[in-house]
Length: 544
Image (cartoon, rainbow, N blue to C red; front, side, top):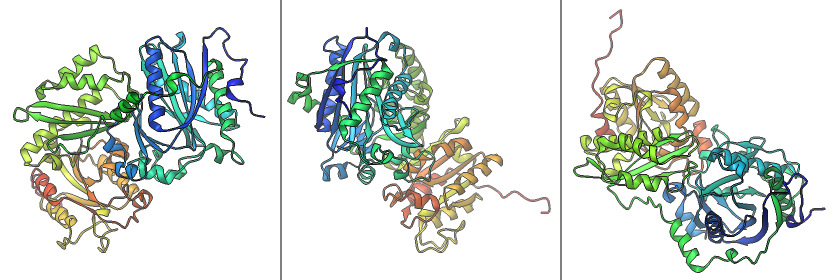
């Protein structure tokens, strides 16, 4: 028979450790739960209150990390139409969808001596191990998947996040009891980016839940008891029954208002049309930056960062933004290096060199936009990959000898849609692309599926292709960044618009080469970009 969490005692608990209150605050709004976490963390950071392990559940909520841009992570219109709250966590990391079928947990405490030198990656691993220990109490063999997921048989069942303030730490996350995958996919803009790292598996094949792993559903109290037991034993916590009436359990109206404002604090809704945006994919996540450029485009102005990477301290990027304000472009590297010397960055898989590379890409976009006459929105459709060569966009185009075109940009009626060629009928933009490439004697390839892309990039690498130009949607570029990076060939890619497989939830069909909707190439951007690709004389064979 399952026991209530507050009545549980473990022989593995350190009897001399400070007591940790355990409370169950039940089902509440996402805003309320976020407010409680943040307030309790600040309380402990200032030396007040007591350590606590809180169990909770949330009404439908889209939860974004502390450093994420809402418009790049969520389908905000869908969230609004379906009364899905939007909250911003105290912790960083990626976006997730919460609902009553998930068990949330929040451990807020002063760091024990053994934790004080742990890096963020180690805290995430420690928290994940504690959740896995709780699932083991239910007979579910779960393992840690860096940086912050818990998996069962390769399928995600829980996530853990961490935030630090002074000497206090918040370890929190959620365990899937059941999974409403359809709503999750519609609320999060690119949810399968992390759920499907190996590509072809559908999102529902990359998730599992407690009630799927068990024979028959378990009552939430049973899962709470097991999770509590595992967390206490793995972290050696001395749990004691808490008081559910603690004043912090009921955030004041001004706290709720502050949470709502914070949720909207990083909005990249493209209302400021002059801002240029750049992104790179690091081992720790996607790193983004955008800025205006003052003084004839020679100085950074209004620079902002956003990322789904795990980052500490929470104010690292806001401080860096202030340090870069008004900076001449040629001083970016020196300023970032100087800033890093005085402000330590703890971000697993993401470092200062990545930030510098991102800003260099942003500056390159500005220079290329000026040379090409492209507006900000058009320049934002460009996705450069510099590779180890570190070339700027103009240099990449000057060396390009190959063009890659996605089959989904060809009309659905075209008999060449699934074939690697084009008759240049003049009835679509792909024909324009082929014509521009052939005028310059570029080798043109229509990519018909994901495996074809990987094979083509590998062949280009083997043939020592210096650079290429291509097209794909930005979601594909982010998710498949590893394929481009492994090839290591510098490229300038152009974003495609219109119907794409990510927005239509048809990624599997796209990867298999059976996606039926039509994407569009921007003929104006394509024409302006190709002006920088020189016309080459075809190489003569020995017989000729």
